[in-house]
Amino acid sequence: MLQALDLECQRGERLLFTGLSFDAAAGTCLHVAGPNGAGKTSLQRILCGLLTPAAGEVRFRGENIRKLREEYWQQLAYVGHLNGVKDDLSVEENVLFAAGLAGRVAHRDEVRAALDQVGLRGFEAQLARHLSQGQKRRVALARLFLAARASVWVLDEPFTALDVRGVAALSDLIAQHLRRDGVVVLTTHQEVPIDGRVDKLTLVPAAAPGALPEPEPVAEDAR
Image (cartoon, rainbow, N blue to C red):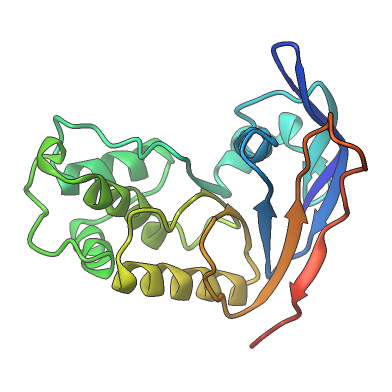
């Protein structure tokens, strides 16, 4: 469903990675790992079409995402390292605004159900400026409960600042997405069990000896 072909990424004068290829089939979670500075976030931004690679291309169902553009973005849900939460909007308004920006129709009852899933029941009218960082992260992740029709989820450290209940709820949501034949690309420093197929892709700094490995299956269809 999602392919990377000979990707190369440069930031300024620095080469982060080169010759990077993988093929993520439907129902696969691709866990991107590696040390800080190896290019994990840059890779995710390339997969979302937010950053142009120095070489190579990303394909969705066999087509270059640069050609698909809006068609691909409608199939994409992205939660980056920054939460993208607007301080002057309420919790509920933030989720509605994000859904509208992504071209998705969301009803208030659906939004409130999503907020309940991430532990924010009773915070619907609270201005985001008054939330903790962990609560803002939950607002960002609530968008995923409204993105069931999106085929590809790209998540940058999604478990950061979540409590035990939040980690369990998100892990279950990812498993449900995989069972619907979706693809998830995530980075995480936490050991979180995910029910489904998880392939691991480890990035190493381009300046270090050795080549970038192919994705390594670490959990073959654990359902």
